[in-house]
Every structure is written in C-alpha cells, then in structure tokens.
Image 1: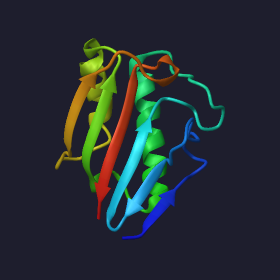
Image 2: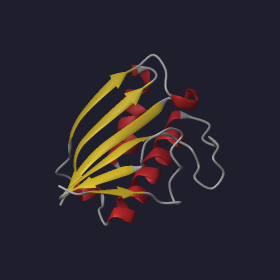
Image 3: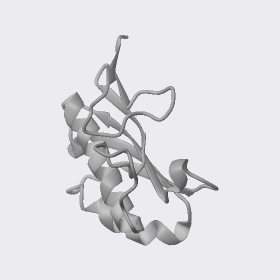
Length: 126
C-alpha cells in the first residue's frame, strides 16, 4: 500500500521528525496538533477554550489539504495536561462535529509540547 505524506502551511510545521499526516489507502492519520498559530509559530491562546479552538482549526487545515473534513473522522485521541479541562475541551471540540461522532479517548498526561494544555490526533476514513 502506498502512503502519501500530507503537509500544509495552513497548519503548524512539525516540530520533530514526523509528518502532519499520512494517507494510506482511504485512511488518513493526523499527527497530534497543539495550539500553535501556523502563521506565527507561537501559542496565542490565553485559555483552554482558545487552545482547543486553535487545535481544531489546525486539524481542519490538515483535513482540507488531504481532501477530508470532520465528517470523515473515525477516531480521535485527546491529551490533556489536567482532566479538569475535560468539560471545556469537550464543549469546543463538539462544535466541529454534527452527529455521528467519532470514537474517542481522552487521557491526562504529565506534559505536552510547548507546555500546552491540549493536543489532539485523529484518524479519518473515506
């Protein structure tokens, strides 16, 4: 099976040896995104809701580049710096979907890149 590397300037450039996304057949595997503004490379959000919104916009940019959208998402993983953020993240995340929600897990971790509070990765299928 051939794999296709997906990259877009509309989402933050990888900060390590990985791709923004890899398409394999009809599956799209999107690397975890944090709240970096792709234009400035900085974290501009001042709260967890703002971070989550920027993360979702970054994921949307990668999906668009690959010809997918949120309706194609089958699985997400949400990493939080603290489970106390769960409700806020859930509210923002939910606004990007219209029913038929993907499978998901949400886990608290000890630390995230750039000391952010939220990182989300996704798998999409057509």
